Length: 183
Image (tube, rainbow, N blue to C red):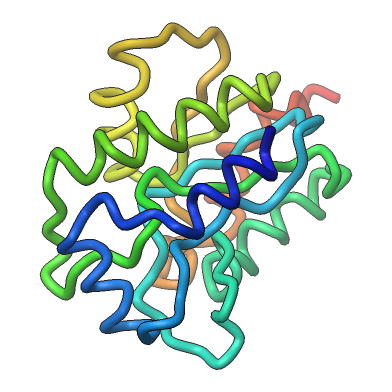
């Protein structure tokens, strides 16, 4: 099912402003940002949207591939989580416009056509939502229509790139992964 969803995502052009922004950042031949992971993942990490970083390696863009992704991968490694137990995605699948203004309809399109389906296919043990923007949109567009038992909200990994201590960032995950100081 994820292959079908991935192929549908590669052809998506539902949101004209988001498609235009993606083409502006990535070029005319680039697809929306795809998820990373498999359908047996225990942990789903959800960000708000792909960054506006343009690199030569983005013919097939994937969520959290660069700077913030390095921090996220370090968390995964530090808690000895098998990479096969991880699924990483975004609420929005296209690069946001320069002014970071996306429309409610853009979010509805992405959550209805992709994110909710990813969640249903994966059925992860834990959903970890990364950052305040993602938290607000997730609560409004996903949990308002579906009930989940194990959702966690943490800082976006970019917070470490912008000055937060990695040790403080890491503490948020101790409870999520049951690896607190009590062990």
